[in-house]
Amino acid sequence: MTKEKIVEWLKTDDEQVLEGLWRQADQARQLAVGDDVHLRGLLEISNYCVRSCQYCGLRVESTELPRYRMPEHEIMDCVGEAVSYGYGTVVMQAGEDFGLTTDWISHIVRRIKTETDLAVTLSLGERSLDELAQWRAAGADRYLLRFETSNRSLFERIHPSLPGKTSDRIDLLKQIKSLGYETGSGVMIGIPGQTWDDLAEDILLFRELDLDMIGVGPFIAHGGTPLGRPAENNPDQVPNTELMTYKVIALTRLVCPLANIPSTSALATLNLARGRELGLARGANIVMPNLTPKQYRPLYEIYPAKACIDETAAECRACMHGRIRSVNRNVGSGRGDSPNRASGDTGSGPLR
Ligand code: SF4
Image 1 (cartoon, protein in one colour):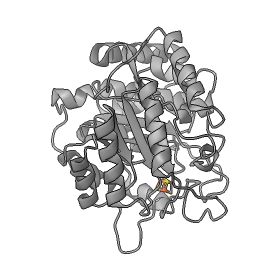
Image 2 (cartoon, helix red, strand yellow; image 1 turned 135 degrees about the horizontal axis):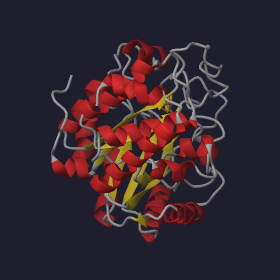
Image 3 (cartoon, rainbow, N blue to C red; image 1 turned 30 degrees about the horizontal axis):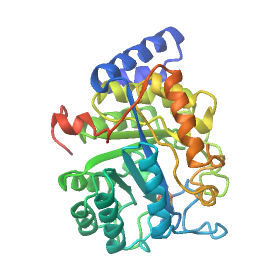
Image 4 (cartoon, rainbow, N blue to C red; image 1 turned 120 degrees about the horizontal axis):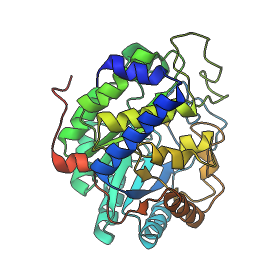
């Protein structure tokens, strides 16, 4: 698909045309990854972060926010819950927290891999190649790192580098892939200053990077951050709407048919009643029920009014099962590895 065609889809509000897009994406999803919806148990293991991302409630400047780091025994209790619920994967996510040391994460990964059959996904920010290699050697299967936008100057504006370092997530993703991780990335939709061309380039970059997992979600302004104010009224500005998020999910499915694509909690935040289901009906095949203990959930507020912060892990599981069945799909079993990874088919041309 060309960039021009992607921009055309992104800009259309014609309901009949969009019905065609949803249909194509759903067919592509069914052909490429089938009807199973895989559940990833999400564990937000620490809300410490050294970064200053302009949109994020966990940024280091959020000094009022009580910080936590889950102890090993709590993590392992939640891992036990993941097993008892039949999940195939546990995702350990945190801010960029160097208090989560290389050895400690390696130890936790090793324990999970020794004591369970779960796949382990890490999402711990921009870490060094040595650390990433050690965690891979300890048994970590997958790594998630969103590049957020392919527009370099916009990225630098919203995501300042640490002093003395240059943040290059696209390069890091290539390194992560070369270490043998199943590699995931994604973007925000409707970042203030993001244009239609930028978003189309993002979707093409998914293909070029040959990603195994692709998560996209709307930009949701957080009042306590520099990007907490509404975007300027600019005709080139991508809106941060629910509809735009469905369009990006659908186009991502068409451009990267074999990737695992989640219907995210950010989507559920915009439409609690139907957001996840509509994401699943328009190209997605993954959901991520939250396993994080209830006392920590309100403290992992990357954006405000996040969905599902009051439910227990058991309630999240029951809710997800119901939602999956309501759209006539099956609850997947096993690890739900990315068919893209299994195919070894890049379909993408050279990496930049
Ligand atoms: S987006 Fe991630 S790296 Fe940036 S401040 Fe938030 S938690 Fe930290």
